[in-house]
Image 1 (tube, rainbow, N blue to C red):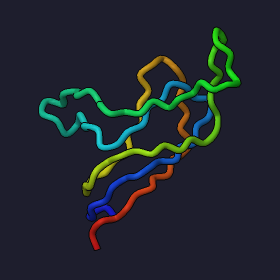
Image 2 (image 1 turned 30 degrees about the vertical axis):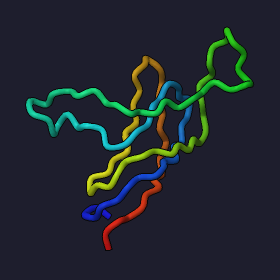
Image 3 (image 1 turned 90 degrees about the vertical axis):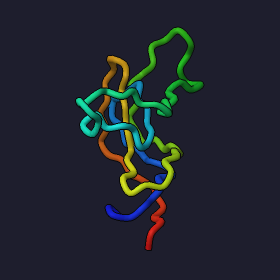
Length: 105
């Protein structure tokens, strides 16, 4: 699939003791920009961590487990999954699965 057009539909992520992560697709790569300029990533989807088991006013626990997220990437030969941590919180990504559709035959 490296030389064929594809679109990424969703990703499965496995975390251990993690908080504050965002996921997206096809973000700019600073190493490919002129002067290695840092271009901010846009369209990232925050992984929602708060649920009914966490009361307001208490600290959010670190998440361990699997997370599934639908994403939209468009058709490209260089489709990529991007995972970002913008806060001073721990991230332990144990693995990920990319669900995609191959377009060229």
